[in-house]
Length: 356
Image (cartoon, rainbow, N blue to C red; front, top):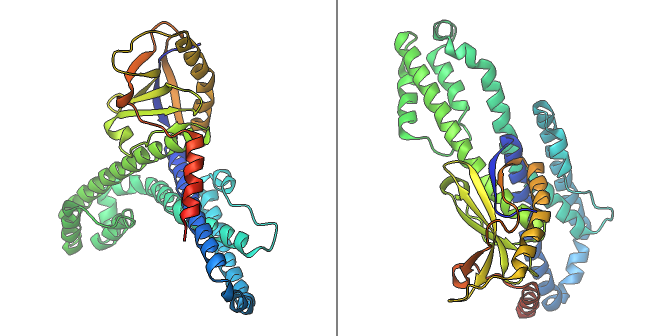
């Protein structure tokens, strides 16, 4: 049994980025499928006259579609080659969309689109990791400026240094200025100093960019994992692991209870505790409070394991027994208002009826 629990958050940076890429791709597929379903319903109801024309174009359309599928599968095969070099083939293969068992055109379109989106999201992560590892092999050579300057022209060194940040859309002004100076330099001590400074600045930029990516990825993984486990989740801001903050989540049958996760970005710790929504002036305790804590305690290990599978490791640093501290009472207008599942289903049906 457990009351408030504090965890220290860390994890496998590369796996976190890969997991977030897979989540983004899956979400994009869902969004596209929902839009396609709505459009297909509209076309079926309003444009039945187009069926003959579609039938005539079906053979040509399927051939073009198969070509797209073939290209996507070749691209994914190349992605697996890159993943194999890094040592993460299993993680990439695990999220590959399943090949349709039928020849249904919509199933094939969905498969192709899913594969394309997964490649689009994962390729930058794999390339970035591959580049990082390749750079690590050359770090010692770069550090030996005398040997490097004797063997490589400043412009060649510049090209290799800039290749490390080729994926960035815009360079900071101070890096762009250093690059211009190195490009104009002749081999010698000044070129060595410029190259060393540029290398340090690029390294700092890459570390800052990766830190931002990981923090955003952690927020995305947390939200999606909670949803996958069946919780209703307050929107998790992408700055949660940067600026800290609070996230609430619950199951639809928890009545007035929910779990509050408070993130302390300074220490990298998160605190989980059960809270109960109350009205103004309501402060009585309930025997259900203890049961709510026990219920959350039994589910907490599942959340830890699910996050661990996606690269986020939570080490428990403090755990109180249920009842050691009273369940926190919070005014209901200070808490998120979750829509009950039944209401969500009713709203979904109403929206579908309103589609033109």
